[in-house]
Image 1 (tube, rainbow, N blue to C red):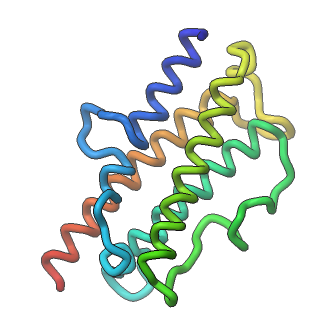
Image 2 (cartoon, rainbow, N blue to C red):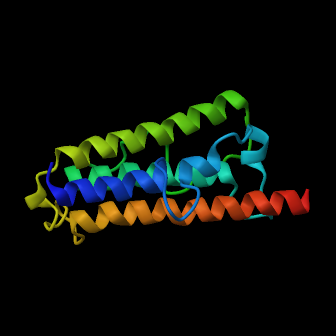
Length: 160
């Protein structure tokens, strides 16, 4: 495998589910949470952990779609970016939404593995962003939201 692709994969995986120097990755922050904990909202109008997880799934999909030049609107949930979780907050639905996050991570990972290194510096089809920037950007996005999840978890301990 090309060293550039290998490095991007390492960054991408560390942000989501591999051991990283910076502390918990995204999956690590979500592991073990109940549906009730994931649905807890720090304040009215603020996102809960569940919504953050779906937001991350959506952006993995969006990066994959952009790299492949696919049409918008094929994400499994209706809408884009944020997906409110206000009712039907069951253990089954939480596990299903976590599976969606994992599936989107793996689907994007497969796209990255199959990329020729020469494409990394190219713009996405019809876009203005280089492919390598999208990949390390979505990894940074996971790390950012992993930190956000940690803060929400701590707030729940203080405020509940």
